Length: 120
Image 1 (cartoon, rainbow, N blue to C red):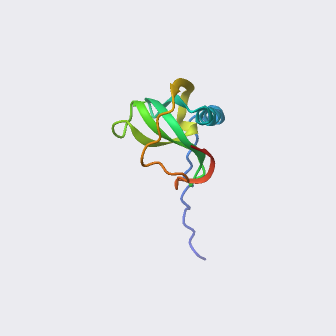
Image 2 (spheres, helix red, strand yellow):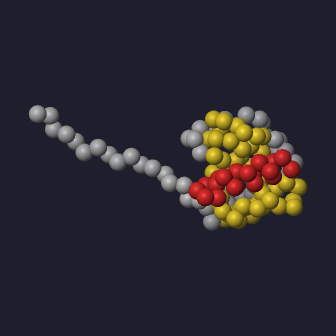
Image 3 (cartoon, rainbow, N blue to C red):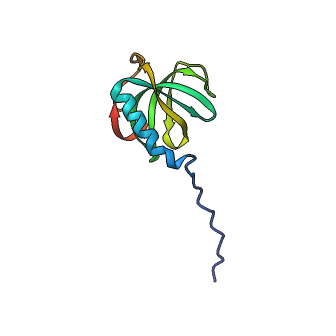
């Protein structure tokens, strides 16, 4: 009789903020439509961003690609591009600040998205 080996458990990533993720997505779409900045906390850092793309990542997570113009970052200085998953965004709010001008390296159809719902 063949010997059975113990199967490895499936690793799952649970959303950090599932109840607010849909609202965060709606706020990002509104910010994009109204050309206004969005503020939120992400990975413990306060961020001010201009939203350029909203959609579903290649990994199947609802997210936005945004140009961070102010605030903090755990991975370098701002301004810079960031990919922010909505279930990891906290305290999302539409700002009165106008959206920043389009960065020179922006191009439509961001490759990190499988589905794009809206873009600049």
